Length: 121
Image 1 (cartoon, rainbow, N blue to C red):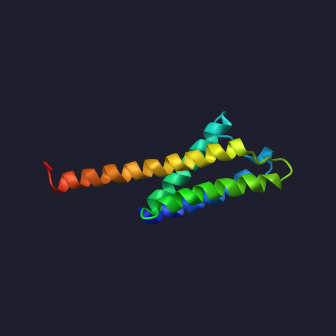
Image 2 (spheres, rainbow, N blue to C red):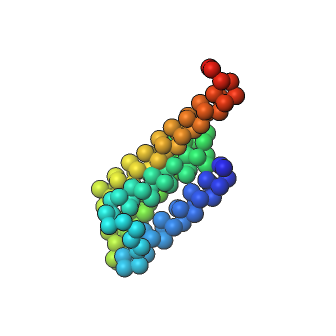
Image 3 (cartoon, helix red, strand yellow):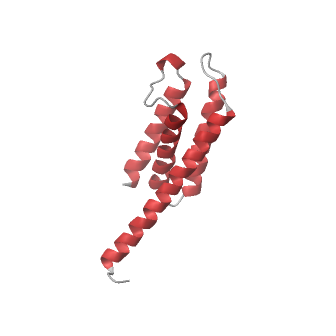
């Protein structure tokens, strides 16, 4: 599962680079609310990195924040896009929520497997 999560995380980074730096007219729209779209993408990014690298969750958070910061800065240099601090904050917080969700998922998974192996504890 870790290898699949790693692959998916890096593929998502590549997709985010493409859709973030492409001209605005080429950007796909999944939901009408841009902040919700940003939050979902970066929460998934944080979750996938934290699941893919379970011993490095803080680094997973740092990668999510760094990708968000780098792409917001990159938008400054594109003609039809604009990098903004509020957009970065949405993305960074969402990456943090994704990492937290992965931590909770791992904790619940360990509790469940412990109860399966040792019922009644």
